[in-house]
Image (cartoon, rainbow over all chains, first blue to last red; front, side):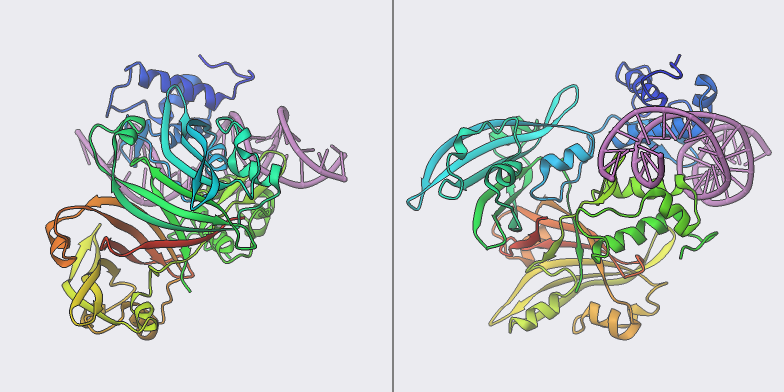
Length: 233
Length: 233
DNA sequence: TAGTGGTCTAGACCACGGT
DNA sequence: CCGTGGTCTAGACCACTAG
């Protein structure tokens, strides 16, 4: 069944095995999968290892556990939570997800007589399929970032470029959160069946000298939770 | 340090303790927190328990782990807002506006077998006319706040009551922001001509012992900006 | 009462990063 | 080399659900 002492961790082998059984329909929606103890016996492994595998499946949204009842197949959408404004790419890596970024628009424009580099990206995660989570529009002053339009941001973190190629460090973010009705573009990219209210975040990013280094505009996929943790003074 | 054999699981106690240390700045952004083995020794608990606590913090995005190096604080702190979660009344007084609060509902109910005081208020400002800005729904545990239903909150700050009559101080809020479509009640109170997407904030308020003192639910008048100021590290 | 998942312990060995 | 997190074992007791 499982390759012990193999290169692939047991819990990962079990996780993939269960995932396959769920996706092929062997374990059907809202049905019980074998209990933890049964899986222990079946594969002759420890319960901690089984729990590790199942925990990952719960995390990725394929399984729901109910205390005293069992673990159920649960093919629903994953709710990621994103509350770190600038660190989308870092956030996803931390969650061991593969970030993807598709450049929708990339050109220089003028705003109030000043030249800006406009970058529009659909960003999300890749598994078997690509799932877009946000649509980001950035306006970056070419006075502060000369030749920034020369980079290809489909495979490059914007913020890392700020830091590493320009030695400019984002420090403060001011944003406004608004609800808007989805447009055709987000409905297509977010695979929304109908128009629905979504979150739009508008704001500016400043460095420690209060220099505005970026204007941003983010549309959130409704399946993404916008979470915040704050201190009360 | 930790209450063994208490009602609260050890890993949860540790999780809250670490969360607190991160939010108060004891462990700073991008700094190492104590290693798993150190935490074992410090609190005299098993490593599995420590790992369970840390796993949850990684999951909620407060910690990033690096194999062979350690676990790092990973926080984008949200500092302030016009919105001011706990101090609506205080905020408005500072701005020389007259706060108004209309109690829409005020009664005790049961949730999961526990008794809560449910308070629904429309809140806003008074000038020549009254303008409502939010509709707040609070659930307050009567175990923590005995007889809280005896107060009249149309002329009284909920948070001042927490502090002055119960000596309980709100410290941390965890919220999720969602866009929803307005219902008849908000359209009437917010004087909205038609149905429109509005912001709904759902969350919990904790004191410095990570005791959940209030569950909240706030609907925002679309004319109110939901602004945030955050520091990026 | 039997079976489930939830929590916890006390070990063990490994892979990785920095010294 | 040592300390870190990653994986794994073999137990234990508890809280919850259901028959």
